[in-house]
Length: 226
Figure 1 (cartoon, helix red, strand yellow):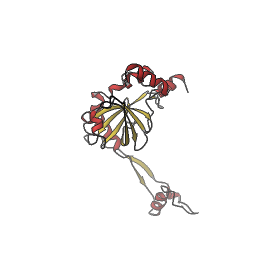
Figure 2 (tube, helix red, strand yellow):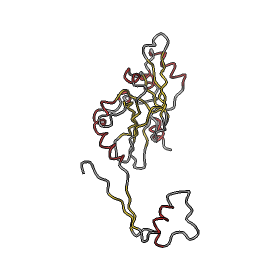
Figure 3 (cartoon, one colour):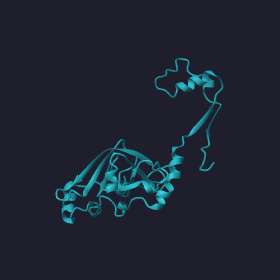
Figure 4 (tube, helix red, strand yellow):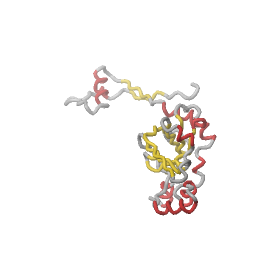
């Protein structure tokens, strides 16, 4: 792995086969705002593990929505082949410091399933993070940035342009691919069904020559407004 790839991966900036650098940002969202994610934004999170999001200095809005929110995991730049994910929060651990319990220092959110995307935190040492927090009065974002665990500016989360573009891209990504197969005989329907299920034994004879489709084609996906 090249030095550039290691550094970018440590900051949650993956490099897919296209060579395009990908950064992951997380918006912790109230449910039901797929058409207006900007309005649903409760707080910015950081994907630290595939199934764990860290929310430094969580907002009151996030804490109040503890029973009903999700992680909107956004790979940037926005592209049709980079899947946007909405993952339910399974558990939220809220960390408070004695004497300042009115303000939450952090929330650690465990997701219902892991994300497929690279994490956005570089490896770190707990002792160094603890010392940084003691030295700056408990500003977790500043400590993470100062130690290079997250890049500066990540705390700002997705901008208005990203939020504005998400609904159309999410709708397009949710549409299934449809492939149609033209077969030679009725029996070939059975053989073709069989190949999709591991519980099916095609038998010693197997499909005839007709088992291969005469033609296989993909039905075009409808575009927005079509």
